[in-house]
Length: 273
Image (cartoon, rainbow, N blue to C red; front, side, top):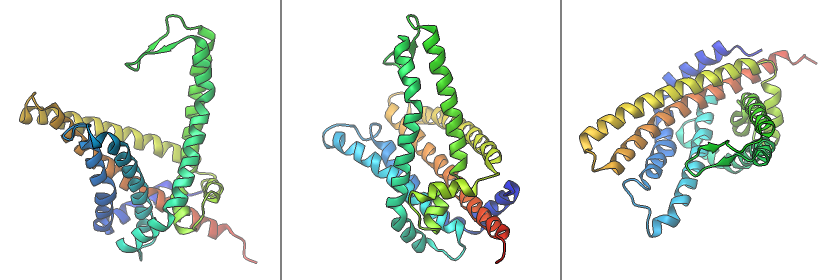
């Protein structure tokens, strides 16, 4: 079994020793694309050519996010890899990574399809504001839909824990869809601990994001005034991009170090011929 405490200690060592490389990758692939995407509809009006360009820009930001995570995984997995090598490796493994991610997104959507069907049959209505009108809903169908959503969320959390070393496998072992089965093998025996890490990571990141954006939003309103709501939203978007990039960097390094630890454990347990 991989010791999570040891993985975290190695994560801290990598973050301390390779800060400059990791931050430069995060700046290029996470922060700047996030800032550009955040400018759309705030300081840059969504009109004319930007109406067509906005979805493409956001899609490009997502692709750069995957590229950045792959590059940071390469840096955290091997101390001999520098930034140019990491970006080159990330570019080489980008298409396989995107293919696996698309498959995972489709699987996640399918998990919630049964709940959506029961929700529709219940007679509940989803309003435009995002609220749900349950006044005419059939209680049995509604309860069944809620139960299926809960079960799908639990299964999704379990799967998220089991694919923690996924990018490490894609980068270092040059696998495509076979990385999914390999990931399940490497996380065997560590699932519950990884679920705990994921929950803790989500709580810390969410609290930090809410606290920082709330404080920055108040300060931005005081400095820019109430006549510049777009500017306030943009400033908050920049702060959100910075926090998200930092959290993604820590997460990527932790996942990479878990992959390395799991492989080392596997090698120790392989019987000699």
